[in-house]
Image (cartoon, rainbow, N blue to C red; front, side, top):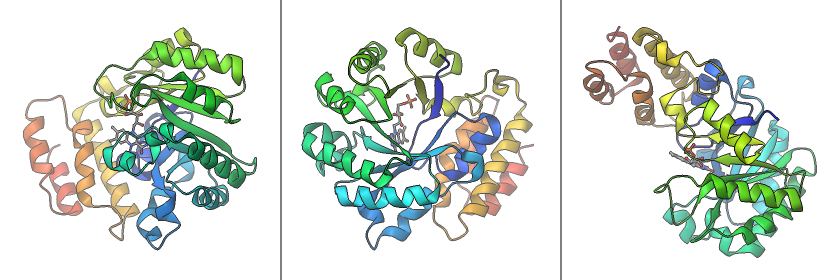
Length: 310
Ligand SMILES: Cc1cc2nc3c(=O)[nH]c(=O)nc-3n(C[C@H](O)[C@H](O)[C@H](O)COP(=O)(O)O)c2cc1C
């Protein structure tokens, strides 16, 4: 079976602008939004978050990733996501960040399984069978813990994505693909219809295909690999042969789309800095140019500086 390739959710990175850039290079089979907090969305703080759910047609099919603590807010938000045209909703049960975990959300739900089940049920009720419901999680909290995956596999989910590390491991050790394979074996026994997607350290489509074949996975999710190759989802990526000018043109497309999308300052211009190394890289003097670009004070100044590279 051909694995599905998915662009991973990355907060403050895979926004609608970057996803549109990637869609123009080589689209994955599925996009995911950055994670959006349902408790914030269903509060007076909503206007600060709602832009995270914007998407363009070119990004379809796309699923929204949500997180939070209150099942009722998962229910309400999911009903809205159906109306907005998302193909599915993914619940974050893997984020290891300290502040998030100390609040009891995301990967902390591995230690509060009654709440995890309530959240899944509320989301499924909100989806009422019209869109897919999935979970993205890790191998365990402190240690690998397949009882967690067994529980998830008993929730009638459409898809489970496993990032092959525990919460404790953060991103400090190599991804454990063999253990992702063990979850897939459990899936075969418990919930044959639930798709299993593997995630962690994939840096090319061919590597992803090999891993999917080796561990009999339905899909591969790629996150940071996109920084080394925006065409990573292409079967024959042109990125390594592209000229400096071609890469700069893509950077300009990204900046212009950012300018058109966030007219009301929804995102700070400085968030553009984290993409600079993708496009301005691999030639003599690239680092000095990046240093200059990252100090630009406005989008127009940035565009002028980028023009002066060519
Ligand atoms: C900057 C950054 C932001 C991330 N934000 C999210 C997020 O919003 N939701 C989520 O499920 N995972 C998030 N992740 C984790 C990635 O989706 C992915 O699981 C992880 O990076 C491992 O995959 P990779 O090695 O292909 O990058 C984030 C990772 C990074 C580096």
